[in-house]
Image (cartoon, rainbow, N blue to C red; front, side):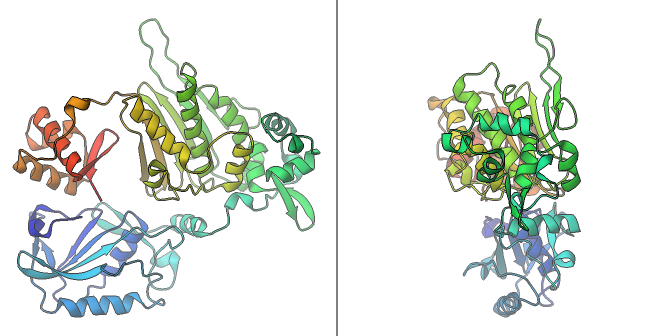
Length: 462
């Protein structure tokens, strides 16, 4: 992740922490270990100090092996720290400018192990990273991680409402979409059970949380999920004689029941209304993915925004699978497996991670800027941005695996280390180089795998 021979080029940020450690293993190292594990991962450097100009410099530890041994011993104590997520080379001694330091590489913990906490209590010992510092997570953040760590899908639990709370009209509209003819012929209660919208709880057939979300009334849904909210906004400005769209529909306004199914059916007709079938299917897939991965206990709700450049699908909760897995065609891990199954029964959504992969593939075929799948914290949210902006260049502009201006490349790396990400215009204004020089250098760094494109911005490859 970093070049130790050029350690002075780096700065502390949300993925790098430096500690002098001449007095032994710092106590604060465990807060940083927890914060990196619960955020995006990172590197802890022991035997490195930060000068007043914020540059990093090694100090030569007298006994780095003893620090590694002590760190490993404490890491194995489950009464002190909840999980050891380091690999074999996760804590090691290295040379930086001829001086001995310790490098601890902390990966992002799998969701089953989060929160990674210290002191025996997740609600007081869980940390996350923000900028250059660690902060103690709120009870709400810890509760969200604990929910995600469970193997049972939260939407398959019982809903605290009777079966009559579900909208029969919505259920019947949904039944028309189901391809299984035998399932269609079932009675109303048995159909709900077969779809996963209802189950036996205490000897009585009651809605599942998925059934309530899919077919319930907004007031009943909000009673169980106080932060439940769905909204679609079309903010496209007018062009020429075409008026501005400024259309909005939400679970609170414009819908009779405000449930997930009614919202989906209303929004699907708006997504890519003028688009071809292939693009319309891709946008529908993004909508289903957003609804099935939302943490309905989380704040701010599901927001679908259409603007002049494309769409932003935003939902509470982090992406539960490896955020790079959908693009690579990895297995999906929907937060709400009950909702995902109900959409699949109606022939809507891929449900296996392949749908998002197909979106990336479609954007590549059409020459658009690649989709951006991002996470943010405090509160946890996932944003999937799809723009119709053409990528610049073509085969003739294929980047060469050679950096002509190494000084500029070094400046870009330092800036991205310090500021996480930046677009071409920002790099040009901050570094004092022309846009064409910045673009040329970025193409080379992309080709070499040093940086990656992230929507319209660039960041260092992890």
